[in-house]
Length: 151
Ligand code: DAT
Ligand code: MG
Image (cartoon, rainbow, N blue to C red):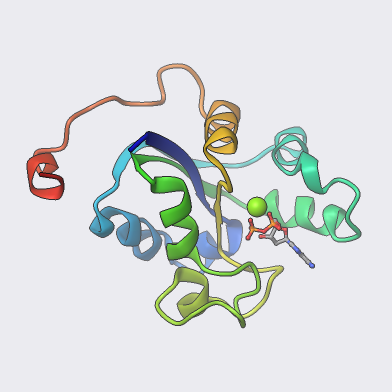
């Protein structure tokens, strides 16, 4: 049982559509610990670095335009198994294939407007949090509810 960190981001469509509170709420209610949070206009170079693995894809330029098209909400969440669990809460990349009950399954219709990002491995969780947050922006704290979440 390894404590992990994941980078979750409400994409510009989620911010424009007023879904920020709804999306934060899903992770908060589940019981994960919020350790970083900010509204942020992503610069071009950071978007390119974040999606570096997809650089060769045909949709890459549109993806960079989308992510930099307006403010995003950057979040870091901590917990045992948080990386895989957050991916389940988010749902499949294509929102039409995402299960009802997931964020994308409930709130989106197209891959190019799928409202939220979540890291795909603990390694990428660490990499992405380091990329999107500066020193002093990550907060270590103990939620009052901690003993009611884990025995
Ligand atoms: P995910 O966001 O589910 O981790 P991914 O890492 O494969 O998916 O791709 C990152 C984002 O790129 C994805 O959220 C939306 C976009 N994308 C992926 N595949 C695409 C495709 N076939 N056409 C258009 N956009 C795509
Ligand atoms: Mg991904």
